[in-house]
Amino acid sequence: MARLSRDEVAKVARLARIELDEVELERFTDQLAQVLEHAADLEALDLAGVAPTAHPHGLVNVVRDDEVRASLDRAEVLAQAPDVAEDRFAVPRIIGEAP
Amino acid sequence: MNALEVAASVRAGATSAVAVVAESLERVAARNEELNVFVHLDAEGALAAAARVDERVATGEAMPLAGVPVALKDNLCVRGQPTTAGSRILAGWRPPYDATVVERLAAAGAVALGKVNMDEFAMGSSTETSAYGPTRNPLDPTRVPGGSSGGSAAAVAAGMVPVALGSDTGGSIRQPAALCGLVGVKPTYGLVSRYGLIAFASSLDQIGPFAATVAEAALVLQVIAGHDPLDTTSLPEPAPELSAHLDDGVAGRRVGLCRELVEGAEPEVVASVHRAAEVLAGAGATVEEVSIPELKLGLSAYYLIAPAEASSNLARYDGVRYGLRVDGADVEAMNVATRTVGFGDEVKRRVMLGTYALSAGYYDAYYGQALKVRTRMIEAFARAYARVDTLLGATAPSVAFALGAKTKDPLAMYLSDVFTIPTNLAGEAAVSVPFGTGEAGLPIGVQLLGPARSEARLLAAARVLEAEAGR
Image (cartoon, rainbow over all chains, first blue to last red; front, side, top):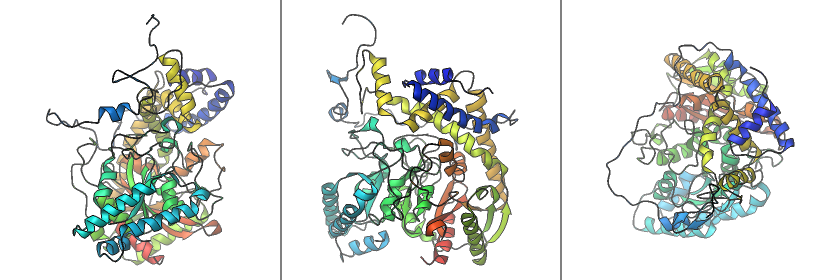
């Protein structure tokens, strides 16, 4: 596989909601390319027909009876939020319309 | 300060939990500035909790960890106490609930002194990626304590507390235990509830103990293990009996000295592992050399799988519900500004690596391929465990390295975990026990690995090595 490019790293940073300056972009591109080159030993393997393992013991759904139970204290949770309005988490404008 | 002796003494009324905790706090005060171990110390709360333990002792309650001071890795939630996971993005956050392990320790009479330093979101092998500065190794403050649970290891090695909890995603308990001369246990996946553990890579993370001796580590693990309905990955059974099997020995056990788990280690480390094999053989085990070539693929698979899971787990740090918010013109600009300021370089690297490995066009080549390698590794371990019941190898390739030695070269840092990663990928159990010394008289850790639920057997083998080393 071709060596990781600066443009690809810039795209990945955008997807991950991280802003990089030019110096960081250069440095991260080199470092990430090095890790991916190390991972080249995996690419070379013929693993056709091998089932993937996403989880060591397999995962099964765990359900409980649908009954009302005590939950986290709303005031305690909201006290940790950066901004709150009317007992809800408040965020800046999401779409470009007048308030 | 030995946890078993402390608990026995407090239970018998020979000493009080308040006196024990006060002494522990003095030891913290003596070296915390130099070593940067505790990032949040709750002296007042700890003394109040100790007083409540003394009241419980007075009513005749027999607590296994009565009055034992503990340190908690800063990715374990304690209600109302600052919990940062070593990150600026969680500065000042106070969780609205306790982790299950925190509740279980308190129920057993242990007293948490506070939160100890770690690599940011447990991403690192030296505790140098913490937003709160590096922790220093108490045995040689010019060197790292290992990581990511370096604060937990340093707290015990400096004698501040007899036991501590850490988390192990790719070696983050065993490697710092080795570098600080301690016993560290990475339990079977699902043995210990992760409710209240800040997630790094959810298919790999496990909580486990640090202690100076095998008996102390076994007792703490027994206290925190066992089914928890609040963690859907929790194994359905109660905690295993561990303390009762410590002196089972290794007679009749089949031990495999694993070539891939020593290859590339420093000569003194290799020599320690071979010497451990001789000691186990002398105690009645049969020892044979085994080779599991698939283990060599572990590092590459791990550094695709763990970042992929982390990129998803860390998406929640968006400045909306808790932690840092850096303002922006609209919600996306706020998200970007918050994450750009809030995350350190190592976290950014791994989140980007994971995002890349999961992205369209690369998913099959990287993440998908890594998951298949994981299957191959689990099958290879199973074949080995059909022949031997315990594997023996090194925990880390070297003794504790100098601060700053690997911070400029992420791949060199990642190689610190080469011997510990396979156990996490397989969801199995492993113990690191100090055995021998290397460069500058620094401790070497030997690693014992077994299949799922083999903790009692691994701890008994570790006890044989510990006894040989005169502890």
